[in-house]
Amino acid sequence: MATNEASRHSDFYISTVIFLVEDSLFRVPREPFQQESDLFCDMFSLPQGDGVVVEGSSDEIPIQLHGTSKDDFEQLLKALLHRKYGSQPNLPQNIEQWTSVLKLSSAWSFEKLRQASIDALIGSGIGAVDRVVLSQQYDIKGWLLPALNELAKRPEPITLEEANQMGIDIALKLASVRERVTVETNRSSSRTAFGQPQHFGGSTFGQTTYATQEHITGNGVAVGSCRDPRMQNCDFSDQIRSTFSTFDL
Image (tube, rainbow, N blue to C red; front, side, top):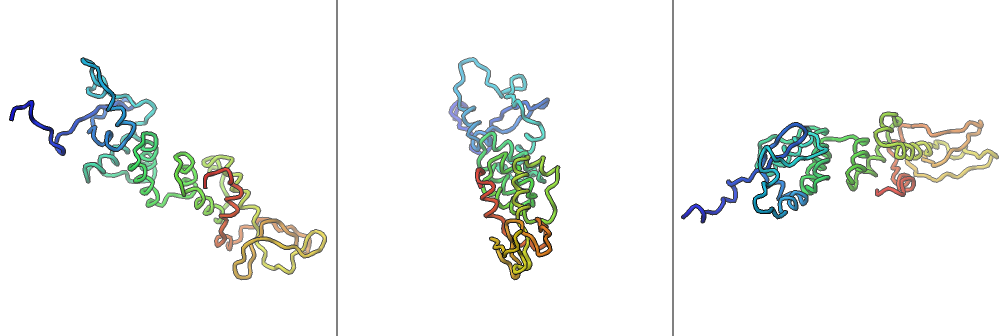
């Protein structure tokens, strides 16, 4: 067979592409980018004029990925090439590294890789605050309500650092959910300010009623939002849905 009649082997003929990320050149197989990302598939499918040097074909004319960090790109390559070629290179190892994969796979339309990063983050035991943050940044369905419910249940208050991470709007709404729920342990002794019995809405667990407003004891002391350990058994989902009505839960 003449050379010009030879066909390219489907597995062992690898086209490469060169990317410039920050100050580093990456020469990597082109196929995974073209096969798994709509964005790169469209980029590589653009017609090239005669005599034009194709961008990404040499170190002198790489595809420049502006605004992308080298560390993030390295983690994406690990996950992408591992999926395509097997055990090498090693997969990302921790939450920070998988978050890098989530970031770039979301931005560049790697749908399967994005889902793989979400699954890996779930398996890593990612915390509730991080799930709140990432669900908003990368539109991850099904993460926000369970994460907020977990934070509403816990005994410890929301810290300033956590509030800054989640954003003040979410932190204040979450505080509202936490602080307006009280524990009523003696229903018959609860009175209004006028000494009349007060009815409270809420969920009953054994002899404890979880109420959704303040009440006043017979001694005239306002019972606020104590973080009774039994709160950890309370489901705050309805209160969260009401308070976060503008969010996609």
